[in-house]
Amino acid sequence: MGTAQTSVQSPKEITIGSVAAFYSTDSGSSYVNVGLGDSFAYAEEITALDSAPDNGETPVNLKGIGGQNVTITGNLWEYNLLKIDAIRGGIDTYSTVASALVEGNEQTVASGSWHYNVPIVLEGQNQAGTIPTINSVTLGTNGAIVLLTDYVTLKMPGGEWAIAILDSATVTTEAQSVVIDTDYTPSASSSLSTGGLTDITPIWWRFINRVAAIADATDAAANAGVALNAAIYRKTVYDFYSCTVNAGSGQTFIGKDETAPQVVYALSLLARNDAARTAGDQLYVVTKSIELQSAVTI
Image (cartoon, rainbow, N blue to C red; front, side):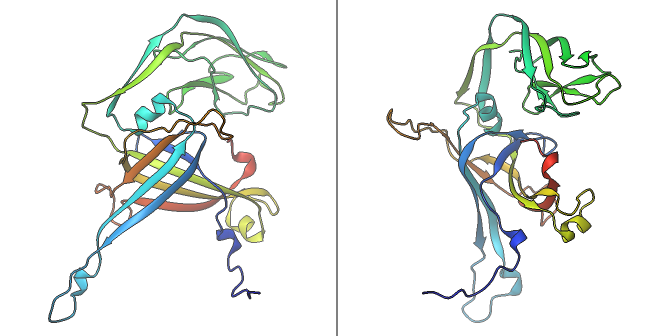
C-alpha cells in the first residue's frame, strides 16, 4: 500500500468543478453569460527563445520567450445565434424577421425569485431591439408601481431589456410576487450567415469558478462585510483580454438513441497579447476573492 508523501498545504487554493463562461464586446465593462456548456478549458502556449552560439554561453537577453498565447475551448449547449455572432467578432451577418405584435403578455415572477436592484429580464423582446411597451408592473402586496419611482428599465449587455425594482416608499417588501404586463413584437426567425468578411474584432473572455465554503476568522478579518461562519464562495476569475475565433463553426449531431442527446457548439478561441495594455498584463489575469453566497445571482 502506498504512503502519503505530503499533506494539504493550503486547502483554500484548491479549485473544484467547472466554470461559468462569459464574453465582453466592450473591453470588460460588461459581460454576457453564454449559459450551459461543458469541457471548458484554457491552455497557455509559450515559445521559448532557443538560440545558442557555438563558442560560448547564450547572452542573458536571449534567455527568454519569443511568444505567448492562450487557446480557450469548450462546448456551448445553448446555440444562441446572437451570442455566436458577438463571439465571432463581426465575420458574420446576423438578421431577424419580425413576427406579429403580442399584446398584454403577463410575466409573473414569484415571491423569492427577485430582489431589489437586480434586473428582471422581460420574457418578451422586440425584434427591432427597442424596449417593449411596459403597460404595468403590479406587486402582489403593494399593487401597481411607478416607473422611475419604484422601478427602472435597463438594457442588458446581451441586448435584452429588463426592469429592476427599487427599495422605494411604495415597495415595502421583496416577499411578494411581480406581474409585468407588456406588448412586444418578437422575431419570427433569426439567421446568421457567413462568408466574405475578413475583418475581425477581438472580444474579452471570462471564466468564473466558485467553490462553496464557510468563512473562517482569517476570511472575516480580511473581507469587509464577511462575518465568521458566513456562507461564502471562494471565487476565481480568469480574464483573457484579446480573443478571436481559432476554428470554424462545427456541430456533431447525435444519434436518436443516445442517452446524452444534446448537440453542442464547439468553441475555440485564441487569446493574444494586447499591445495597448501594460507589459506584464497583456494576455490574461487570474483574480481570487471571496463573496457572500447571498450576494450571488446565478
